Image (cartoon, rainbow, N blue to C red; front, top):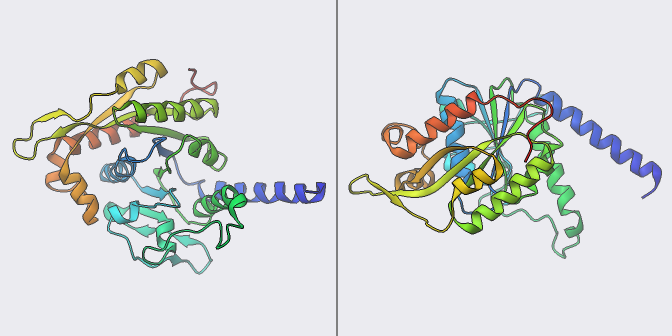
Length: 295
């Protein structure tokens, strides 16, 4: 690449950063929800955290940043909604339950169509990372979020996802890590936490998900996993455990049906109370001093 081409690329990135900064200028706080590993219920936590914050009277946006396997629209009953574009050309978030403003790659895809970054002959494989970054920047910077108290971002699995997105996020951004108490999950989450520390991104805390299960017959809770300890990870990293959300089949059923769990009976369940408490603690979180956190 020539010097002129390199300069042009830098100018393009700077322009994108300015556009994203303008779109997020009226967003008080960005909360990135990460896990490092799939299958731990991260999206369910992100969706219900957004709903719980909205129930507190906050203006909340939700960005599903998992471009290849977006699931938030399904959980909120928004699949099939047409893409909304303003007269100015800006994207409009889709209105969801409790006034949520939702943006997702799901709205750009028809039916169960998958994303194909590589092309039919794999010719775009080497550009996949750049294409994903461009798409995320567009979802953030082309969407007219309006004034928000909080924008919850549901990250794709992978320890690299938060640092890669951080270049587009404002200084008010912070991260929340979701884990289940298995050694495999905790290893992936620890790697994600280390990458966040290296990138200087504040950590709000840890969420233990599905550490216990709720009996459908009597409502009692019992351990679901015995292999690992989220508390040990918290001690080793200095990151506080903010909430423990038990597995409840009613939460899973609500997500599959596209119905908000934090309404009616869901609010009174152990999982509903844990999610409500999580929202309260996230809302009360204050960013650390400029020097940031240390390991």
